[in-house]
Image (cartoon, rainbow, N blue to C red):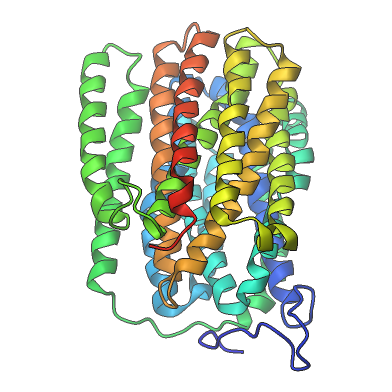
Length: 467
């Protein structure tokens, strides 16, 4: 099968396609291994970030370190989408793996928080190329009937890293040092990439075609959006200094510029929630603005306001992975796919996210004890497990062949833009109270996240249908 052939949906004997068949197993093994590595890197970094910020005397840059990969993800997603559509996903995956290694090495050897932020910037570039490369490889190599199952497998690949990653990372940070966490991810890259090679060989590198006018426009404006996100993040980090007034002005200007560029980067109708691909793209952004923003500050909240050690604070990441995988597994069931419409699945997902985010907010406000609050957070993870693969399968189902990369890039870019803005603004609040953080700061951050989740719930019907 070449990269330009449509994957078969059934065997020669008329049997339904099976993910574990000899035709599709190489892709499943390689892709799941890569997702597992990315999951470990994500969970491990989230666990040790509060520790390393204190060690490097860089708590004021916590928001910048959280937002950094999202900033480069925005620009890199547009480039990765264009390269995937023009020359296939294999080249994109190779570039992503190489940059991942460099970014993790730089973060692991960082002498200052600023250098660590640079490593995180490279990590965002790598994540964009790996995400888009895998998504387009799936569209080229698998029939539509298997895609929901693969997205469920991707979610399941987060379970083990979510269960052991935070505890392992916290233990390593306590007994060896947080730098070893990043270096371990580099060591794991080699065997993981070897597993992915067979499926990449089945989709050979194609000659690069010419950039279309639309691709050039999107890439240029995505780069501009990334630059404005960098300004927003830097200004937010300075909001707790004597330059606070200038920082607020800089943040306001960056936000205004982002609104203008988003109209050029994302599909027409995204900001108004037009039915079809625009609504799917907007929903992806709202999900990130809600869930990712809250999740990125939870470990810091638990370590600073509740005094938990990194390994214990990382339990929030464990809950996220396990519950997300559970929700995705439910989403992939044949009975759900056949009897529950995409719009209904999105209502269920965003409803659970909206309700579940109340748990962390009430923990921060010291209204709920830790256990019941985290139980609600688990419900939010379950909701993301339902909503996220629904949006992914909808995006591929609504895309014409040759547009999967661009549409997937737009969807991921919306998520990254929203997540970066949330991390930057939340980081600005943290920076203003860096010397005396209280639960009130985190209550405000999560309350805003709840508003975005409620907007996603309202948009669900439009994201579940064609325009």
